[in-house]
Structure formats: structure tokens, C-alpha cells
Length: 148
Length: 142
Image (cartoon, rainbow over all chains, first blue to last red; front, side, top):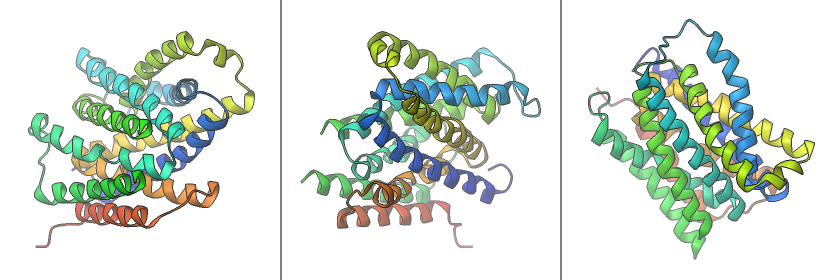
């Protein structure tokens, strides 16, 4: 960990709060206002437009535009693009309370991939695995019972 | 069923993206990483929207445009930067489960503002997720 972990956890919770609110707005938007692909494009455009000036002027943080940086964040961006369109479309097809918990399977996938590919950077402990499994169990309960 | 399948696609692609984000954060800050990722996202989705939904783009209302701009501000700018910075500080294996708590907030907001039904399985499921988050974030007893 880097710096005060409480600040890091606070940032994670803030992200969760913002994402939660955005999901409800997405649901209303793709149901009544625009197709998922159009909504995704506008949302991504807006996010880029807002962050780009900040990113270019923030000289305090380390930054070296190397091939590795472009490849790693480029792939992250492409995966995010596909995921964004899929999430917007999913919210059009099903209620928020059913779809958004399924999004939470992500930590389980992340743990598996972290263990396979990022062992040199992070250690996956039993506590982390147990916590993630409980979260996935919550997802399964929600999706199985809502599908019945 | 389609909604569930699409949600699973999101979970898969997003998790792969987070792994590459973690790799990239060795060499760049969270803000710069967010910008680069967003640019690549914009290129892909922008081209797809232009090709497949050109008519919808042309007929888009101002309300619709501003609605999704607000979503972009909340989700793509603020939340993404906060998440990337959290990953940098905590590591992806600790940060991503907490970020994945957003269904709790989404469900609460959906019930409060849009009248969606909250059922017992949803409450039980969300409770498990909260316990899981607690395990993830609490320190191991000395």
C-alpha cells in the first residue's frame, strides 16, 4: 500500500457512490433518451473532455509516455469501452437491482487474474479471497432468485 | 437473460481492464492513465456509434446530451480517477471489491428515486456483499 490506506478506502467508496448514482441515471437515460451505444459515446466523450486538460497539466505525478504506458492503458481503455457499452445495454434490458450486482463479480475475476499475472506486484491473501467470495455469493443469490 | 449476459460481459472486460490498469500504474499516474484509457475508449465507441447509430446521433435532444454528459462527469471522470488512485494506493485486489459495492448504492438510489422494488433476496445478497467488504478492508487481528 502507498500512503494512508484510509484515504485509499475513502476513494474506493467515493467511486462506488458515484458509480451507483450514475447507474440509475444510465437506466433512465437508455430507457427514454438515447440508445446505449450513443449514451456510452457521449458519456465517454464528456469524461475525456473533463480529464484531458487536468491530465496534461498535472506535472507533479510521474508520467512518461512510453510504449508500455500506451499499451497497458490502451488495452484498459478498449476493455472499458466494451464494458461500458455492455453495461449501458444491460441496464436497458433489466432492472438496476438485478443487473448491477452482477457487475460485482468483477472482484472475483480480478482476484483470479491478479493471482495469475500480478503476483510480483500484489499478494492475494485468504481474507481478500473470502471477502470477494462473500460478495459473489451475494450476487448469485440476487440473480438466481430474481430469475425465478 | 440478455441483461444478465451483458452484465457478465461487463464484469469480464472490466476486470481485464483493471489488471492492465494496475500494470500501467507502475509507469504513470492515475490521472494520466485515466486520460489515456478514456481516449482509447472514445475512439472505439465513437467510431462504433457513428457507424451504427448515426441517425440517433443526429436526432439527439439537448436534454439527452446533457443527461449523458452528467453521467460521463460522474462515472468516467470522477469515479474513474478515484478508482485508479485507490488502485495505486491499495492495490487492485483490495480496491476493486470496495468499488464493486456500487450496487448497494445503485439499488438504494433506484428504490428511492425510481420506485424499483427491493426484495428479500436482494437485501440478503447486498448484506453478504457488505460483510465481504468488511472482511476485505478490516485489519487482521494482531
